Image 1 (tube, one colour):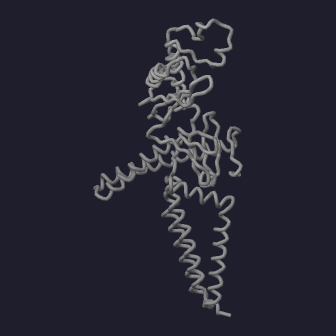
Image 2 (tube, helix red, strand yellow):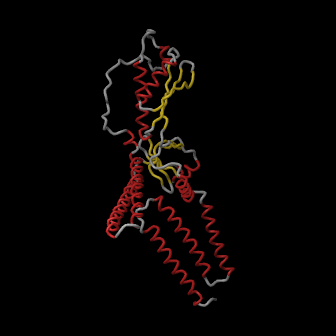
Image 3 (cartoon, helix red, strand yellow):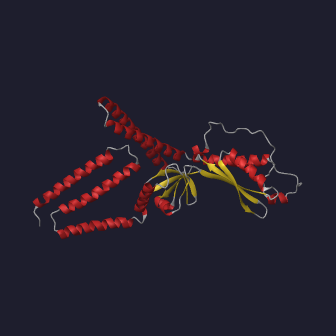
Length: 357
């Protein structure tokens, strides 16, 4: 049995490792409370790697035979392999899927996405799950493994196609229909509107009016505006939107059309009235706004850090004061998200996907 004095180098190594890990934890994480979760993630991975290396260094410092040291290292390798094998299920698999999403960044906070038949805006991105706020203002939590293993449709921030389909009778020439549908697309605020003939049915022709919407945040309002514009343009052109089957079966004169009496258009919504998206996607809007504010503050912090290296003593004091203010702002920006997440967890409006539990 080795003498007690033989363990003194190992104890010193353990002390050095403990002090070193505490120091790196303070430098990388503890003193940077203003960092976002995405910015803390690489630092946390570095700490995990340092801890793993420290364990190996401590084992090698023990006054044991080489065979025993190899057995201990083999045991550590087996435990690590078990953790990796366990990643195919439950928590660890979701964490790894969350890491993949953070590095690949297929979507960002505030983006419109569609997955597994649900569509909405990304309101929260965590290591275990991602929350999507739907058009009915519900929050659906998807396990990150679902987002990795399922096709995810993301609406590009540069623009999205908004469209409406409707069926009209064969007695109306398609060129006339196309003319008024293009007018509806223009009045709805769509760029480069176009009309397609989708299908020729037994009793009707199916048309599709579509156009590019550059302000994707107003997608819900844009769809409604397009529907209204189609109604107005077709009705004003004496084109009735009604099932041809019904037209053929109704006991009315042939020259009778079901078109509302033209009335003076009244502006229902005030210019400053809130958009439906502001209510439906309130959390997604807030998350995107906070993320945008964080990026602005972080850019200013980086600029101040560069200025500190060339500033004189008086300027340094002012820059350091401003730096402290910005760090406090970042801490405040991170606080509401955490508090709201805790409130939403207990709220009845949130729906979890089965794999998220």
